[in-house]
Image 1 (cartoon, rainbow, N blue to C red):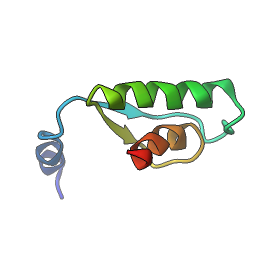
Image 2: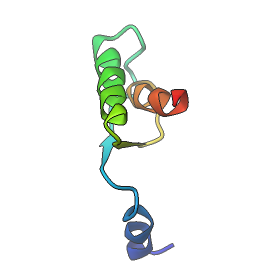
Image 3: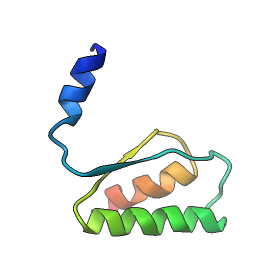
Length: 68
């Protein structure tokens, strides 16, 4: 897939937010909870959540999508 095809694939997803963050924030970290809360609120308002595929704080954003 070339660069422009990637944009073509993403053009139909509507409003979205991308989460990038530390792979060192465990679930006990306050920022993990904030990322999870923010992702849930955005998802409830029809935003797609795009994560970088990593662990910890990015996982917090991904959990919301798995719960829907």
